[in-house]
Amino acid sequence: MEAILYICHGSRVKEASSQAVNFIKECMKRQPNTIQEYCFLELASPTIEDAYATCVQRGATKINVIPVLLLTAAHAKHDIPDVLRKMKNHFPEVELKYGRPIGVSEKMVDILEERLLETKKMMTGESLVLLVGRGSSDPDVKKDLSHIAELLQIRMPNTTVKDCYLTAATPSFEDALIQVDSYPVKQIFIIPYLLFTGLLMQSMQKAIVEIQRASKQEFVLCHYLGYHPKIEQIIGERILELSGESAYVSDYA
Image 1 (cartoon, one colour):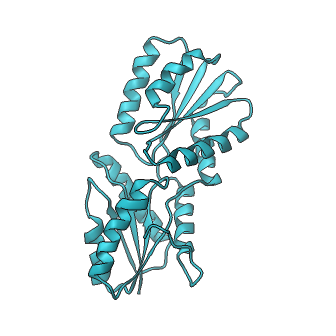
Image 2 (cartoon, helix red, strand yellow):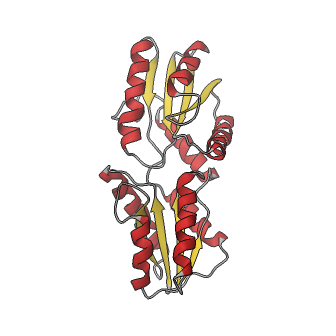
Image 3 (cartoon, helix red, strand yellow):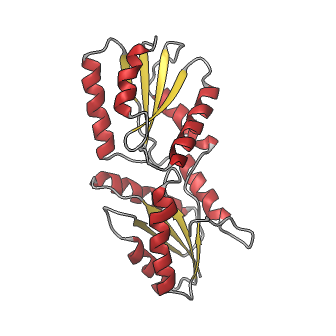
């Protein structure tokens, strides 16, 4: 039997993990597989090891693993594959295929536009959009988020779009907030490129409150991505990629 194993990042914030579980359960409803399990890379349970073993115990002879991560960084390239290799050695009779993260997609740009529209504020030539990613030392993260910012810029030619990062990449979110004072703009729309709430979201909210006190510009914090139906569609595409003999299989597994 063919199983699907969804791997989420995990968070110390209980609400974030609950959001992830609720979303994965919605994804499961769209798939015909009898065996479907979710797990977390860190900070929450069940672990990858536990969920993988559960798939085998339920009768899986093949496990399609989907990393529910926004971009391809160290977690997708190294951390998850390291655990999967261990599980493959433990259950050598079970076939394993490892798929792609969500990655760059026009559907993700659709969501960004939706988050901007939700603010009910008019976008003008005096508006600036900061697309804020989690960040990573992996250069592919910056390359991919910069690409997504460029795609959003194409859709909004009269508005400036910039990418910045919360950790381990430049420009940092704090530096970007300081730099906007030099731009001839009145409104700064901030889109957290995060799947769920959590400590990073809380730190962003605090930083915006602080800088707003000393600025005449208006800072508008948009909703984080959330587990949107279009992300669910992308997850479905990643599952489909693992089907059949000509399936895409990640190079990292």
